[in-house]
Length: 234
Ligand SMILES: Cc1cc2nc3c(=O)[nH]c(=O)nc-3n(C[C@H](O)[C@H](O)[C@H](O)COP(=O)(O)OP(=O)(O)OC[C@H]3O[C@@H](n4cnc5c(N)ncnc54)[C@H](O)[C@@H]3O)c2cc1C
Image (cartoon, rainbow, N blue to C red):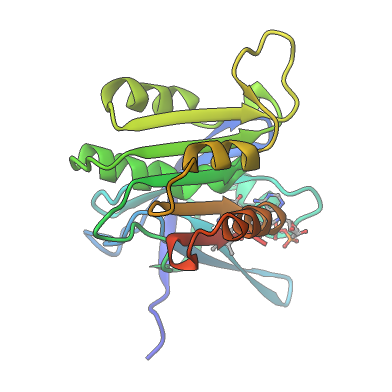
């Protein structure tokens, strides 16, 4: 038996950075949409004769029949520009949530590594873990080019104030003169966060080039691949 096709209905969307939108959907035909934070939905739509399917990570912790997404409009892309034109009440065919990019239990001290919209699954995973009383040390290393592209920055800063076991390490690859925080790519900061430890879990999410590079460096440092959990967007 295949996975059931459901209709996701857009409740609202808002631009949270240039070319990036946060979406809130619900699934009216069910009362609860159970999923694990970090899982993705599989959306489909027919463009002319052609059915196109794309995956999008949930950016929320489960709540009734709702889920949230965070995506950027890929220039000359097919699906993402179409999603950006949706109005509240419009629906999208969906399957899921699906996938295995979720917390490993028992949880270890962990490093979460994201670039761009790769932050999406971590928003839901962190909310559920920290609000649920998770007490392992968690460092979020988040890389974007410009300060204005740090998605959900205030939320992560608030989490850092509230939970002493959480550290938020944003880094900019193209900072302007007013930025006094971390700079450069995520790789160097992941290595700093890992330090001499080889018992931490490292979760990585974003485009293939970054994910593969971080994985390769962690392996070089001797981190066992069972500690490396990743999701590639392309
Ligand atoms: C498990 C999984 C989860 C995903 N979750 C998200 C998510 O939460 N948010 C999100 O924005 N995308 C996510 N993606 C990527 C998404 O599925 C699409 O690939 C993306 O929206 C581009 O589709 P498109 O039809 O618009 O472009 P296409 O016509 O398919 O063009 C693809 C091109 O876009 C590039 N690309 C793919 N994703 C991105 C991206 N996010 N940013 C920049 N370039 C990209 C590819 O390298 C490729 O060159 C996820 C992918 C997977 C496999």
